[in-house]
Length: 114
Length: 113
Image 1 (cartoon, each protein chain N blue to C red):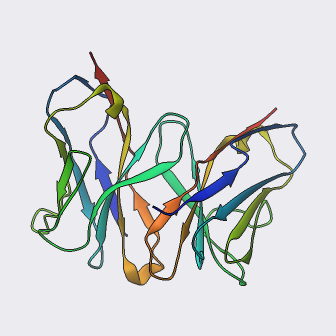
Image 2 (image 1 turned 45 degrees about the vertical axis):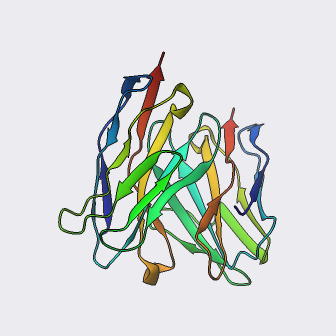
């Protein structure tokens, strides 16, 4: 199946700093990318949807100024957690979908803010 | 709104036991249904899917049948293995909704020798 690579797989950062997470579709063009957040023992919560070259659409309750999403090309989307705080610690997962494909998921990024 | 309800876990089984994980859904349209599996420390992997009523998705010995009359998509496997231990997520997508996936809360499966 298609491969979506997410990097880094885990990151520890200090409170107040920013962290960037990359999501790459390696063998198909991702017209749409999704960013999810997963709390321990809970389901995935959709944070935002982005289409290549346009602004991301954020779900209700998600702060767009805190979670910056860039989808500059058909193979790369980034999520930047700005001014991270301990409550932002979570497992973040990206998902990519081509024009005629189902969604494929990255491996996830474990963010710990200390 | 659209939603997916799964049975709560964890589900603990002995190897070679029969597995059923219940999933029901509520959708305003006519969804496609999915089961995803998440192994420890990894992202989600698509396990199987069904796109219309009475379709049966199957993969790696797992099966689920799209039942429109009961709005269900229960996951079954006849004989589980230790390597099946993971968290299983039921999900739906409405193709007119940008293909956003709506997930259930997940069911953890533990298979013991």
